[in-house]
Amino acid sequence: MRKKIINSDHKQKINSDPQWLGIEKLAVVEVTSEADEFPIEFALLPHEASSWRASGPGEQIIRLVFDNPQKLQWIRLEFEELEIERTQEYVLRWSPDGGQSYQEIVRQQWNFSPEGATSQVEDYQVDLPAVTIVELSINPDISDRNTFASIKELRLA
Image (cartoon, rainbow, N blue to C red):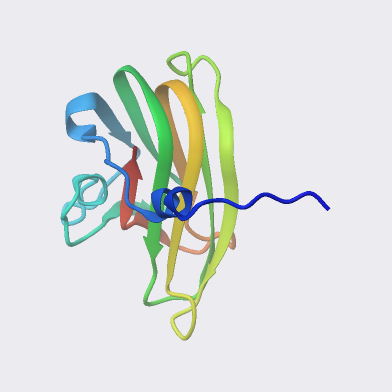
């Protein structure tokens, strides 16, 4: 058997919050829609008490277009659904060349249920050296019901 003892300093580094990027200074944010009372800033800026929500039903895209290529090591997504049962699918991808090509980071489905799972928090440790675009595509309900996409938090480090 091959094994390795890791020190607690390494474990502590993984579990601590990284220094989140100031998206408002580094990128242009593109969204397919947003509800007036739930703008995208609520999901991207620290210390916001609310979340982003689309202004209409169906699949939505949030795209962060960086002014200069960024090195990314951590991506956090937090979703919350307190009212309806649904299965959401999202795709997170990135581009090294201004959108000429994309590489998928993750494609995931999650089942929300008001009596059970009401929130989803995902932390992805990545090693992306020169990111020009990060794109999150959200299908709020794979059953094609009249459901609005939303995200509570999208952070990058």
